[in-house]
Amino acid sequence: MTREEILAKLKESIVEMDEDLAEEAAHEALEAGLDPLIAITDGLSEGMLVVSDLFDIGEAFVPQLMVAAEAFEKAVEVLTSNLTDDEKQASKLGKVLIHTVQGDVHDIGKNIVKTMFEANNFQVFDLGRDVQVELVVEKAKEYGVDIIAGSALMTTTMPAQKDIIRLLAEEGIRDDYIIMYGGAPVFQDWCDKIGADGYADTAAGAVEVAKKLLAQKAS
Image: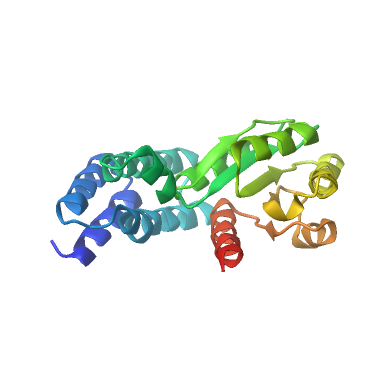
């Protein structure tokens, strides 16, 4: 098979949500000497974008999203099986700390965004829901993350998003992190007002915004 055919098969395996096909295509990629990172980004991730688009327009649902993510993860395991731990970490697009903000116990949306990040080869640290502002900052430093992503599902908990940025600034480390926010009552204007770096209203959009912001930071 040619490089293009293998990448197309990797993409198809995710769109079809076929774990066996994903594993088969991953083995074929290795046998062909295809760079694992290229296989992930130009094959598997392209398929995940299709699935996430279907999810956003209501033609795919959470169970299908989970199955596609499992197929993605299986293929990544195969593709990275011969890499050292350091090489595996280097193949990740970035580290994301995700949580639902202090005072907010809603986490369905956060969990979907987490799945989408993981399915696009980000390393994700999930702090759960109702996470104290101070703990978010503490864990961001501990894990050495690139992105802090926080969801607020009630207008009364939105100020916690601002407080995270304030605390980071007080500690002189605000610019060490990309700050992304979302949630039902959260909009671009709010993120601009409090000084966040990114906003998305869909799970797929969050991944694309993250990739764009990481590229800008690296340039």
